[in-house]
Length: 328
Image (cartoon, rainbow, N blue to C red; front, side, top):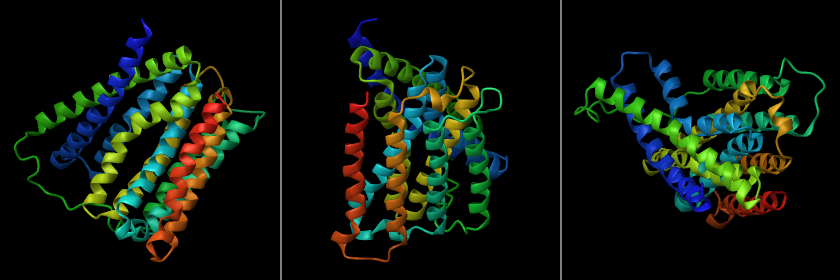
């Protein structure tokens, strides 16, 4: 297959990921509205479905034996998510949106930081033992995710998390129709995610750039755009805490996906098989979230002073991009 076809397929699949994942989110919401299943169960199913771009891309990366692509995609998605939040913070600067976040958002931020520290330890340390091919870091990440999520849910009131339900939004669709479209778009996103990952791996070989850079930035941006749309919708509705907490919660789930990816990578320890370049991406994501937490805990300040953390995040994102590119 010629190089231009591979580049074209990558671009088409990247654009398609955005549109298909957005429709998947819409019909997932429709299924949740019309189903008789418990809200918690459907919430979990829909949460997994919306994360299918990241999940499918990383699993496909494992299948084609590209650990760098799998790790870079998920850590890079977290980096892009926070950079996106910083951009939204500047766009909605008159509202100083981060000052509207509740303790829930702050706790999710700390959860992501602790999970990322464990991932960085797995990337940088050679641990002597593991269970079969599964690293202790992955087990620790999964346990911390579930324990931390339960701790947060038990201690927060969910203020601002849920948008008022409108029972007539999907009145023109039957339950079977929305379920069919939900399943169809879920299948499409898995196919598109696989094409995106395979072509990304070929691009890294053709250009010599390296799978870490391709995964952390090109694939990560493609798979994270639906999350950005979801956050933008919440912010447009002035539901600032919803947008912030859902994005930080998505970052925590991405790290859990990384641990799950390690479970299915039977050739060894996934983190130790990936490039050290991912250390820069992980460290930068911790710095970004610390700046977000700092902005959340501040009281309202003058506009120019308030925007400094978000401006620093955006500048640091491009600096990190350059550093990872140099380590290719």
